[in-house]
Image (cartoon, rainbow, N blue to C red; front, side):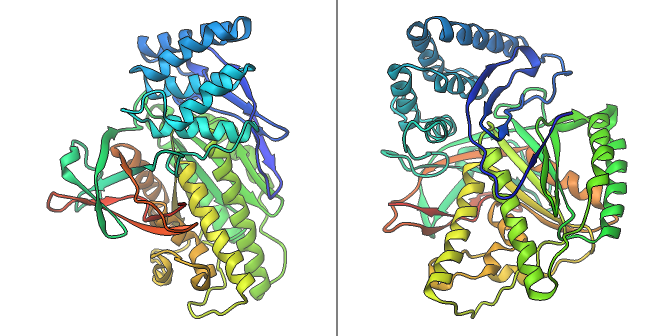
Amino acid sequence: MKVERKWLPAFPGLVLAGVVAFAALSACAQSASEAVFPAPSGTAEEPIATKRAESDELKLLKLNTLLHRDELRALPEIEEILKGDSSEMLKEKAVFLLAHGKSPEARELLEQVALGNLNPAQPNPAVQAKAASLIRLMGYGTVSTPYPATLAGSRALTLDVVVTDKAGQPVPGLEAKDFTLLDNKRPQAIFSVQPASGISARPDPPVELILLIDAVNTSTPVIHDELEWLHKYLESKSGGKFPLPTSFAVLTDTGIVAQDIPSRDAKALEKYLDNTRVGFRALRGSSGTYGAEEREMTSLKALQYLSEKAANRPGRKLLVWITPGWRGVSDPVWLGSQKQQQKTFDGIVLHSKSLREARLTLDAIDPTSNGIDTYYKTFLKGATEPKKADYGYLLLQVLATQSGGQVLAGNIELPALIDRCVADASAYYIVTYNRPPAARDDEYHEIDVQVDKPGLKARTRMGYYAQP
């Protein structure tokens, strides 16, 4: 299985490479550093699940061929897909094809998709965002991404919302009328609520799982135990198949190594783990405060790289970071220079925005303890301005909670904790609303989603940084 090694920092670009047939269908985007768009169903060895999927893939193959032979004839067919009731997956793949067009007409159509002008009455934030991202990454312009950030002419913002009962189990079957959404404590009109599940042969939109093993912030004995638990976890999967397409990422002192293509095949993942364990090394460097800062910066660069990589793939991603976390030097009453405060604030905004635009939920699992240090909760409200910025807002547990993820602990129950993270994909809701206007750049908005049913609790992104 291919792996991708990146030196930190990394910023993968994007060039569309085409469409591959049948169950291995994926749109590939490449630059000097390679980023691969995996088939949402998993790997090439999986059969095509439905006739609808086969029909979509054949349609994309024909469009890809026509695009190269007669681009102007292909554009109306792409536009028809984007305007119609095609699946979310088909529309996102069609956008990838459109970005590969060479003509001014193709670029104009791509911009209209990004701006939401093809079907203003029924905006599609995810497709609009993908178009805007491709425009930026391929150097066509600077149209802002609308999913879930601001789009010119639109303020649509979309959230992945998990609703749980008192036992912590995801709850399906809710309707739009069951939800209330507050933005900065003010009720907002909800545009749409779409039930979703990633635990299926052909989820729409797709969901994938990334398991990150952290040898920078975790001791060697703990890493050894962690690998043993992961092997047992892989072996325990019924039928040798994971419920979600899954990949591993490994952070060491030499950089980050990540699998290109996620797989549901437990044996293939176990083989990758066996081949990778020889490369584990804890970060060698300074101790004390300087060592903590070094590990924190290395970790944050890795997170940014994974966010950028994930943004180039369709659908939702669950990143489970297995580590005690980085011991950031934080102080709620810290008074740095104005330049230091602004730099720290810019970093906080960057990671919040990157996770949101990648549609990435971060979960933190501490494999060294059965208890959780609650100090991180001091920083959960979000930094509202540079003079209140603190490194505490960049702690792993803070970033995870802010993204709508979970903070868990327990070495003996590591497999069960991973399954708790995976369960978030079994039943969730895609909630879209128009955010209120911002008065200034990087204005922090707190989000609160409530469910009008006893005993149920909604979990989603806690906030975002808006632009005017």
